[in-house]
Picture: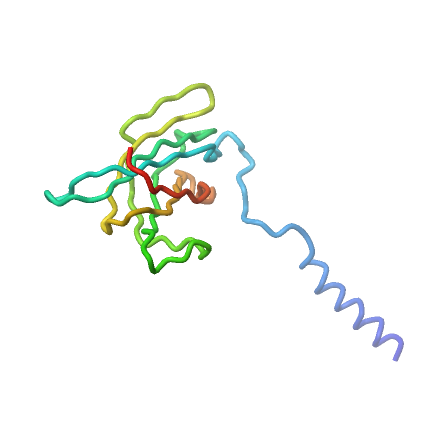
Length: 152
């Protein structure tokens, strides 16, 4: 009986030990391929789409690291209507692929500027940026969530 108990204990330890350790998405070993959002600012302004007035968002954002390895920039937008509570989780209703209209590089920081007009006009928006890498092994890089509610 002792042999059976010992064998069972060794078997359980053998199954449990591989589950220990760091749990995280794989990261590339070459840190020169990575980039991160440093800061961003968004301001609402009045624009037009198909000759109709809409509320648009002008964004300026700083990206550090290997900005040349970004394949695509996305803007995730959640209109702030009376149905949305202030403390609710961020649930973007629209994702816009954006192309920077202005790009400035200073050292390790790249400043991007662009404008986007969401399909749903709202008095305010919660938003965040997403940078997708050229390298499929590098996970998407998300900015923090920002709030825009004033005209420029």
